Length: 474
Image 1 (spheres, one colour):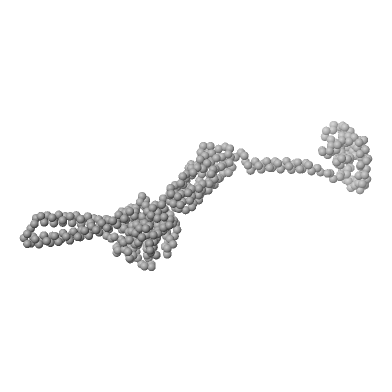
Image 2 (cartoon, helix red, strand yellow):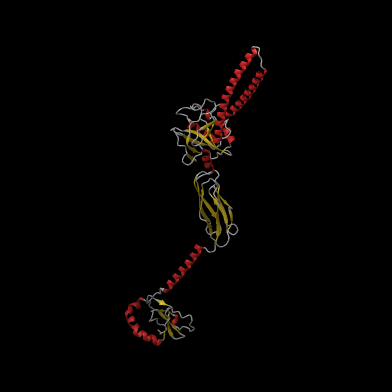
């Protein structure tokens, strides 16, 4: 075997050497080492270091590797033709190669960097615009019953302009406009409508959608706290009370025995005329009053439920009187263009009422004042001022009737005297004229009193007591 065909190994790294015919030298196949050795240099190193290794391996290793043939591959850059011997495989023994760890580490670091860059691009998506809104929450408070000032919601986007639209899940909340682009319309007016709202705490969500944005949806919470509404203020103003003596509840059951209120969500406030027409046709007042079974609370419950069934919004009302442990129940309505109207339809048998076939009464309730009643077909207005005027008219009516009766008695006495003189043959023309004038005055007064009586009604309902507390359940 020629020296060129013998298997040689690099004294530095242990990798195999190949023979370069151009340079007539041995070159290490390890790409990191790439050491070159001349014949003389390699022989010298081999003689000093390699003998021990070759002797240690011995014959056994050679015999173990008799079947390992490796065809010799000439260097790709060599222009020399291999010798005849190099065309055949040569017997060789292989030692385990020492693998370099630098290459896998470099490859792993490179792949990790590439993956990190790709994930960063996916997560941050710098090419798609981001939707943003300001502020990120809204809060409204109502203390005077009026709609609170509107607020502004700013809608913007990073990068190119995008189209958006806004929705909300509360009927009391309005947004305008409901759509636009971040280039042209970037401000939304957020306002509150207190119509049909009641005191309490409410929440809503404003949702901004933009399909072209990275974050397609932004949800903004909104809250509303109502301490007073126009209705509650009107009620307190009409009754003349405050939070210490007036309690107003919405959609809550009355705490009184056996009372079950049935509300109609579609019921609306009537006009005063519509209310009078309804209570005139309703027959609740015709039910007999039965102590312990069907009393004022039951009358008020029936009228409430009947009104709600007819689409008329009604309230059940409880009142208490100064110095009394037992209260009274009635109803309330909020008439359009008129205000609060109290109705008392407690039927016959209640001791403070005069016998009557009709017990539909307009009630007049004011804290610290007498609980007043006027027949519904006589009442012209539901305010307590009207009731005070009504009482004065009754007092005047009664006084004038007393005066009228006195004058009639006086007139009758004078007529009797005049007739006696006529029968005795004495006739005084002046006295006759005076009596005729007195008769005409009395007749005019009678007509006026009868007209006033028709306006005041047949009965003057006695006051039940001084109102100390009112509770209203809508």
